[in-house]
Amino acid sequence: MSYDLVIIGGGPGGYTAALRARQLGLSVVLAEKERIGGVCLNRGCIPTKALLSDMEGLRWMKAAAREGLLESVLSINFPHLMERKRAVVEKIVSNLEKHIAASGIKAFQAKARVIDPETVSIDNRTILKANNIVIATGSRPWIPPIPGADSPGVLSTREILELDKPPESLVIIGGGIIGQEFAAIFSSIGARVKVLEVLDRILTEVDSEIARKYASVLPARGVATEVGVRVGAIERVGDRLRVVYEKGSEERTAEADLVLMATGRRPFWTGSGIEELGLDPANGSIPVDRFLKTPLDGIYAVGDVVGHKMLAHVASYHGEIAAENCAGHERPVNDEVIPGCVFTMPQIGWVGLTEDEAKESGRAFRTSTFSLFASGKAMAVGEPRGWVKLVEDAQTNRLIGAHFMGPQVSELLAGITLAIRKGMTASDIAETIHPHPTISEAVREAALGFLDGPIHATAKIRSFSEPAEGA
Image 1 (cartoon, rainbow, N blue to C red):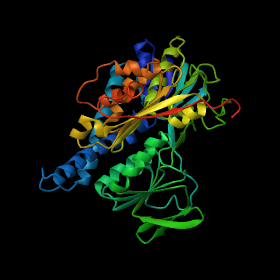
Image 2: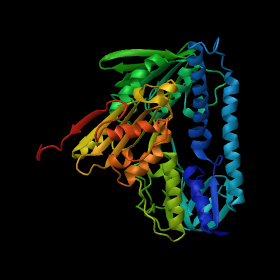
Image 3: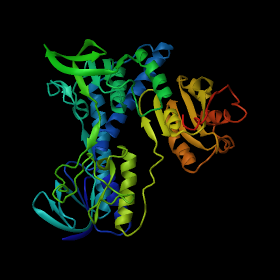
């Protein structure tokens, strides 16, 4: 049979491409070897957020007990916790499957392979002809070559989400977003957590000042952290695991019930058939142009597999663009301003340039930082330890970056992302009425820092001049 579009991979990039293509009237096949939703819905974004939401409830309960509102903190029913997580995932995925079927998309739960730019094989049995093909095969965990990394009890993020009982102690190798979110989950349950990071700080994607502020809250949350380490081996010692690592010239060890490998992800395209067609992802990702076209006519690639920003919302955005271009449109990618979130406690969010990136750009810029200790909403909800930091181009006065740490700050990102994309200034933000009481008021206060100063407190303002020519 012949179709307008065949999509390989049913994660956010793939299923969004399929749904958008159907809106545009294309006939569509979607092939996914597991369940629709990919890593994000089944083994990543959604299950971890379900668990983190429950941890928020537990944190509130502990705070209520400290304040005398509750007589005691109830114990966690871990099996029920994991069952609720599974129920949330099942509901979302099953609803998506129904939506895909109702949209008229032909879906296969099977492996698919590109035979040529117009032909796709489904499980080596069904042959489909396609006017266009989209590769949306995502990414997979990257496990460094550490001796003992395959030992029982050394888990991937997929495996740790299926535990039947919580560990009393956990070592997490990797201090990035994934590692920090799992540290937040298991430390809240009561596990002793130690994070080992090879780089000189955690959360390297985050503005360095915000990352340092977040690191300062971890000891009180039961999370120990060591950065600048090199893990040499993982050993089994009785019923526990020992991680052997070097810090400087000193050899150290950390023991735990379980070890989580949170060392990042890499684009995954093996088995898709593109290698046989001469498309060699030499740098590990599939090359595409600004319309998401690969060098092979009629074949597009979206999401993690192109190796740009491995985020579900980027993959969905790519899926829409690829579908429109398959329908004959000419829509280029415009993904220079991408928001990012870390759903820890407190949350972290950012968009645009960090302070370090602004310095590297050579431009003159200013930063304004406002503390949530002056936020009525943050004080009311008992989470005043947080900050809003804005970055402004000193010549144009346009906002070029925003960085948040505090309660539910991920919800602030859409508005500030729009502001940065549209070239808005601090005055534009300051002249906009913000609802009270909300955390969003702190964004306005930080913007006022670039003008006459905040109303309810002072802001920390710093200016960075453009370096002299030749410096």
